[in-house]
Image (cartoon, helix red, strand yellow):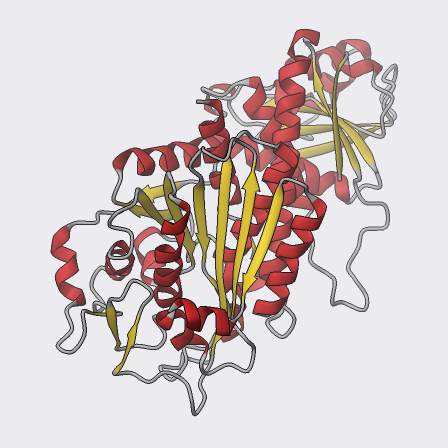
Length: 497
């Protein structure tokens, strides 16, 4: 999908389709009003006939409108003008893209970014049109012998602005939107790939491909023997049951002076999680291929960074492994020594994500980071707490947590803070080691973060639990690419400071 931006009047656009908004009670947007005037009131007449009244998400496609240069006009219902806020705007953009993709219009000129959205800038709207359209058209059909492809899919979209002075900032918004869309696309492809293909070795190859594509990115991969020498006992305890060798993937983006301390992103990369000896129920276990979506989001962010060339230094750490049952697999009651030297009693082998992350958090200290952010599909308890709408964020540095929450609001990839009080640490007590790897059913998301906090005490650190947001289940089963947009927005904000 290609995007471009220009200014011009809607009636003059020689395009397969012009997209304009209609508010409830059949009130035309400014761009729709211009079309109506050029067409001698045809749009108003059609609306008066009752074909559409402007309710949110309605669409109406008109062909061969007189005195309009475009072949088609797509009217999109926007609801009441004063109620047009973030989520509704994204919904109507999504509806327009899905509708157009079925019409045979391979390109279009969209005036939706000209609509007034409460509290949002023109740049925000342009970026959201790009990201939402790209997401609406995303398909993962690489393994279908007969893909359900559209005969003439939508391939190009021109975002229209009526003010020529807005073009420079608009182009920047377009570039940001396309970079984030590309990052989300990569994250979705990795998440949706089957576990027999997307192994730790495959993730390492994807990191190498990014380093080859962008001169600002370099990569390194530690093998299991390297992890043994380094002392990553917690990580290696997880991979013991798998025939696929674990990989510790290191990505470095260098966009600033070497003296600038980096942001370190740590992504959980369990490419398939059976639960190990504490095996999961079989229902929906296929979705455990998504247990590497934290890793996928880190790779997606680096894809966006390569395009945006932000003046920052960023390090990505991806501990990648499978978690499978085997005669050599870790057992409940085993005690392992982490890279930090702290000992861990493994009471549940299905709480493996924190075991690989804790060694990565300790390894991250080598980079003298400004902040560390880990991203993981860590706990089912997060879905109980927050559903599928928001990722959970917990951390030991309130300014970092605040910045992540702000980035989530700006990007539409929202998060919500949960507490990280000392009282929760009591649940991790072990009779035989420094700590247990689980804290029982109560506050499962919080105690998982408490566990990780013990390996980031000297750092400014935050944890994103994306178990409820990284993928969709059921008929719409699909990776979402979250939280690539949130993290990229955080980096954009940081670069702007």
